[in-house]
Image (cartoon, rainbow, N blue to C red; front, top):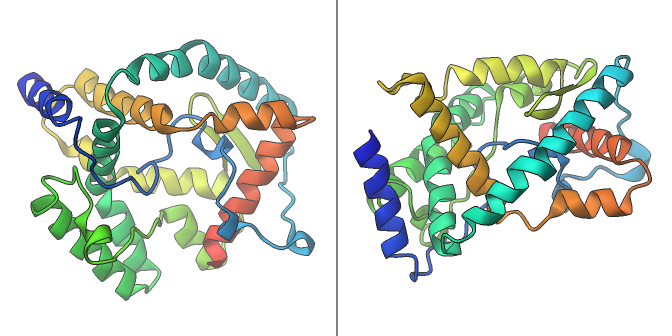
Length: 250
């Protein structure tokens, strides 16, 4: 496993001067990832604003404070140092993880009876795993015009009428709610990394690489929110709730 990872990084660094396809976004939500401003197409109209049910706000604010310190004092500095890796190589790493997590998107598309999206995810996986060299590149999007369809079990539950439940903030993982938290546990069974015949610390290292790589590609979104928001906790809570509702309704 160590040799495989070393070879992968060597290949990425060697071909870092190439210009691979830009990633569509982080393949999986990194630490504090939902603190980023949601894409415009997932905003609801102002009159449809979603208000999060937050009965454990004091606890959530304490965890939010911890995550904030973790982000600024450890995650972000590591991600900035990691930017020594050429951006095209980091984009390819992001593409690789996006391809790796295809089972989560594929299964949830089928569970929502979105068979066309499921077929698209299967096609993307086959094409990107072969022509795209194990998912390092994304010819399915650039050549075939088939973009990734982000689906998870929290969205699946929401599409069948499950409410979000109460809002919560997890240490390291950031904002969620009861429905999405339970959905994340189910999605964990679809995570290929946990089926690799590797040690626990190696599995953790893969997840850490995914997180650091995704953070290195972020354009300081969280910092911008903190600078502009009167209460970053409330801003992020509302943005999370609105984004998730928008994903369910799309």
